[in-house]
Image: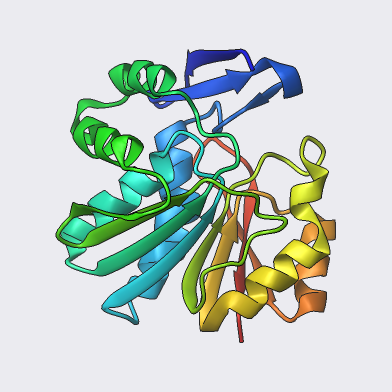
Length: 220
């Protein structure tokens, strides 16, 4: 798997994966996308209602979503238990190079989440505990009672098996009533599938300069 580090429009880095011709983040702004799609549209919405949040992320990737959520939890004083599944973890050499291009204020937390041991709980800061799961989403048993789900798999046309209805039914069953799922993909076929499962879906404006719309789905 050949990866290149590229700088996005907001100055933060992304990775480009040659074998599937896909970037790990929006080229319009990696940090901007993560903050808008996942932290602000998902985690912060739950934080308005709860003082203890359980997050499940599909696709640990570079660890950027985890690092930014850890920073948000510390700032707000909202305890967050964060689970993230990744079948093909990036080598440490790649995440270290990525970190060098990341805005300095995020580097320590980014390093901490990437150096956390897989498959066990690791306290990143007093308000954030991370469990990175090296496993297969298609076959694994999901954590229960999830308040927030970040669905950050590669695009449906690149990784169609990750967008199968059976996956979203498993996720739906693992969530708490009132739970929130967010994803960058607002395609009609995905929105309709989530609605058929039982989610209440809404399209939200995308991040400035990025995708026109993103998708948020609420567990009734």
